[in-house]
Length: 275
Length: 162
Image: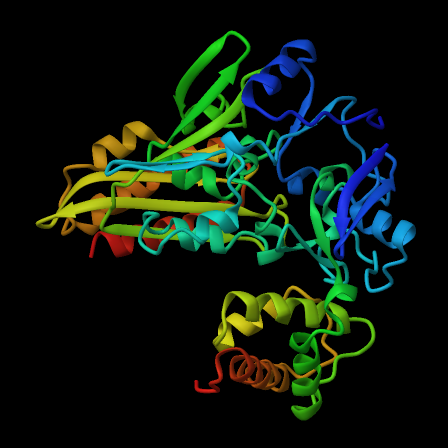
């Protein structure tokens, strides 16, 4: 379906008015995901589209000692251009691995999290960090964890008639970081996924542990994470193998990605963690 | 629909259809021949423009999204010393790209030198990787970018150190 006339709202209030009037409206910030998935000369959009890239209030960045709050229209290049050390590791590395510089100049943090067909590269890390998103609807505003953008079956789930307006990332740093991106190409496909494992280790003991893997679906076991916290990094290899087996049996029940690749990442992460 | 924007320093009112890509509108309406809509998926790097000062692939931008933007294509830079130096450095390093990717590579180098006056080899290779053409030896291209950076720095800051 070809669009009629796009809307150019200039404020969040205007965007919400548009959403109330047209619940199916496509909100477009960078538009790289929608446009990048089409190779026909004429682009196809839903019947109603609102271009929000130039809404100034959605481009603001606020930094406190505890977190950094980013407007959803902040471009990925904009994020990378923040003073070195502003973003917690490995966020700059993850952003740098997304597409190429010219695409990152247009792609936004909001677009990366709002993708309805799959999880993009930022989701696993931000979920592990317990980042929050501000969701504005015509009936009100609420903050929710990035994890809530994942439905019960591990598929993307974005609330209807909502605008993801801000992203709040805690500036807490972990002293164990393991991140790998699988798959090639500027735009993600079925073979693309991101693996993030972060932990805090104090005097040989794992104080906090998070692990997320996401591509067309997301995989995270919060109860296992709780059980790993408190273990010593010198734990017996038998115990570590039991954790890996646990993860693998849960992963195999989902069956959305090559289990051997996931296993190799898991083994590498745990080998580094328990060494 | 009519899209008001500024292209290469001049205000323009372009006629576009809702599903048009920016590259097609700029090429068809303004005859900007440096833009070649080839892959339409951001892989070939033949449609670089600067949009509000940032390098973007115009095939990945819906035309309507450019409303109110400032666009600069290769045509805006071709007579500027920055581009002349890049071409001279390419000639000296024997790294002249083919007609297919020439403007794409020059635009990519222009962007890189604007952000990073003394780029490292890794940065150069990553930047040039955006242009999918293997006509030029990467080692010579890296050398050319280094030479262009020196010329640019000498002209701008009266120094050529690295």
